[in-house]
Image 1 (cartoon, rainbow, N blue to C red):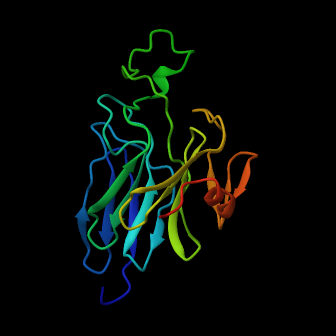
Image 2: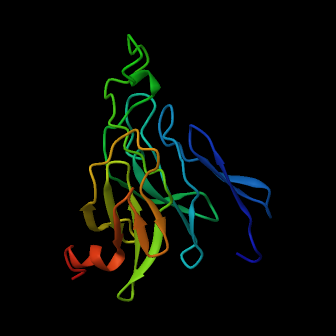
Length: 195
């Protein structure tokens, strides 16, 4: 990347569009599902690796794709997806699945559970190793290798739910899990070693 590149992310129901302002051309349109997997968070920028990390939600229609309820690493220069980690396979849900909708006419067969990654993942350092930490509406916290997307550790931090007013979110080295506060170190102490 010769000069500074401004990357604009456009939220759509069919994916993210990575635009290189210097070139002025769309570099990629990854399709996250037939009807889309929403992106509710601001991407985390990893300048050293040239990656953007973001979380997705459930599919709005069937079939649920392998990029829903996932953390995705996208190449910041090309828009190509480098890796994807799906935490909850088979999650398709929309508002027609709500109990007050009498016939659930447009509710996908899967009917949820609607466990989005609605807050940005946090790139943190623990014991000299970078970990990408992401909280999910299910109440789960996932520690991923930022280079490969491979699972490093997992912790069930709360009961979760699809209608939480806020979802697990990251603030520096702390993960705020709706009244449950843990530090990165306490998570690491209870998980398998990096080996």
